[in-house]
Length: 256
Image (cartoon, one colour):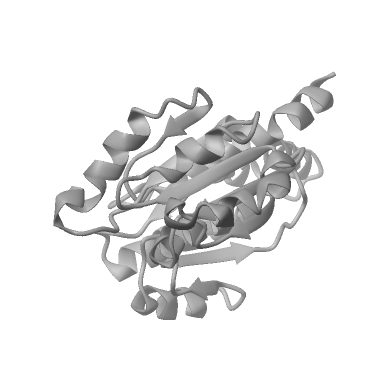
């Protein structure tokens, strides 16, 4: 919910289309709406630039659907991460435009495709096994109004593959790199570009990878100064931060 929503409520009240009680009820929900098992944050878009995103893991399907129904009434774009086909069945009954992206485990409604970023976000994976996490990042970045390009399976075991993408990487505004195993790829990419690199350790690997901890520690110790690291498998968080970086120049221009 943004300032325009408040202006619309006040205009409707002034025009006599809403009485005082109805106007007060709508204004009350501009901040958050308590539905018992969740307090839906309708002010998130105003504060952070994007509506509340629903993290599906650990919630019952009907709870996810209930939260979704409240958000989609007020927001053109909605994301549900870490969710299931069962939940999608409920969501489709609420909103027929909802998309199910099985590999990324993401449901989204993508009605407003306005481009808000000043450049392009490039998302790379070290291997094919890292694509589910990377695709979560890609879908998030797209839904937040960014142009996204994907570079899959370009890990250090065949370093010529990432070197072949040098021009695309250097033309990017932000690069997200998803890698498991020893997590070396972000350092390589960081040494090739002069833009922020957001490293996403994935839980891909054999026993001593410790579910992504080895990659996480390797990335945290990167000698490339432009590398920042998010949590294991957190493609969403990487894309959200990348989107804010990519919006930076446009936001400054709009405020002048």
